[in-house]
Image 1 (spheres, helix red, strand yellow):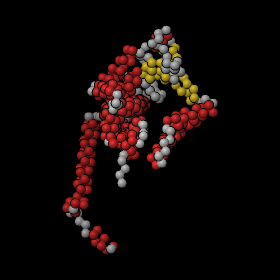
Image 2 (cartoon, helix red, strand yellow):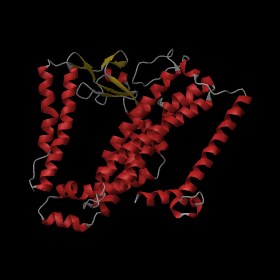
Image 3 (cartoon, one colour):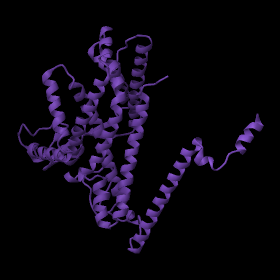
Image 4 (cartoon, helix red, strand yellow):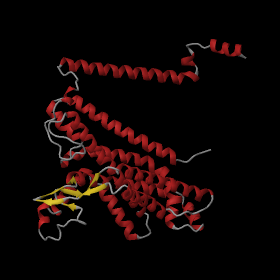
Length: 404
């Protein structure tokens, strides 16, 4: 038997790489890959040579130089004497903040609107249809500018809160919505707050574990366990108990009017709020259509069979329709998340300093390093897009139909 295998191995000839169908496809793919590598190597060397001849050697030393400009909205400490690298990091964090919050809000609105578009109530169904058609067919930049203009024109200025104007009053003495921006309470973390935060994270994990257990009991044993109230209890009770056990280590810094402006708390500029809200409701219109298409793709027989078992409409949607519709919804949903992230580059239109406004805007103009800045900008958007695709593909593989 071994001699037969050896004779087969010895009989291999180079001509088989082209004549044998077992190896021909691999041969052509290897040749194509080799030619592609050579092409990119030639283009890269040609670019470097032309830049060298023009006296434009690629260098990233400018990232260590002082930036010399301020950034109005930031998540980390920064001033005008910080480096261009730190300014770029501030821009990256601002972009990620808008992208993450936008994807969350767009998903919530899109799922709700997509379900309501199939409502039996004629008025609700038509209102949702009008919302989808209006926001899908108007460019997102126009919505960003409209929402910013509305916030600036309608909301009162901080100085108006000093009088008896009923339209200029704080909500619950903790939230202020002004023409400059929104003010929220800021948590101050003291000793022992880490344990409270860890308890909160454990509670969130416990909710998912319990819901998975309840779903398993329903599918395998037919036992219908309560979901809502146990989830609410797990969300609030452990963290509240630990909060008082640790001596209330988290206090709130409330915004207060001092002079002609508010001090303290968290300040979110109107540029950030309008950009976040516009990207969310614009993308939600597309997500709603994806959700509607996914639900309609599920056979009506599934709904009728679930109803014949006595399930309520809400449970039919949660347990029967949506789990099957997710296999159709997730792939186009990935594209909508990527579009929202890339559309955040329009932030410069309303003065929100994202990575396009810092690295691809002021830093590029001050240093004259256009190629280096653009390459870094492309690398960031490529990395964040691939990360979103990877995470969503993992979830897509988890919910897709498992075949035998």
